[in-house]
Image (cartoon, rainbow, N blue to C red):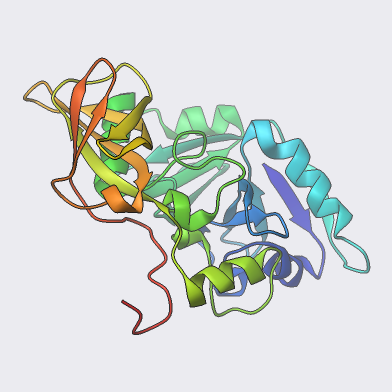
Length: 275
């Protein structure tokens, strides 16, 4: 977790992150991205709009050093201080929010629908005393149903947010932010070639698989799977837009056919009226 303090925190983050930080309401977590000047992902960054009005960031541990260094470079005349806090634990809870001394509970749709709870590990453990732990498969099933991509699965460095179903993290009308111009051009003039879709396989893969189409050997990649009662599996995949049609059949080594079950999810539809 990255704690931020100072009079200019909200304005500073508004000019750096892809999300509309000015619109973040206390009690909510907002998905955002830190982008390169070319509009490609450096990392996800969940804006934590706490009840007391403060704003902090949740960052992936493996990307935190790079993200913090990038943010620090852009603090010039701003009244902003950064303090990395590694002694903070995060958990997702659903279907009801959770309260406890020393923890924050923020409503969110990312990294999945529910509430993001965080605080000192001991405080989080105490708050979860009467909660039931969900299996990893149950959490993946929830994400698949909500079309919520995950960092390290669908969302990877060096991709455009629309390529990985992460448009919920982008505001196209808030004004300038780092990487805004390339995304604005995509939004105005053309769609990305790869998109997020739901897929289904007859067996449940043990891990990520590469997907092929008859006319496109490298048609996509599926990294999230959840077993269904019939012995198959639902999943999320990044595929070429030409394959993003319900009923399209792809293949994967070791599991055979994979059926596309949706059109593009979390995609940039472009300017109003464009087909």
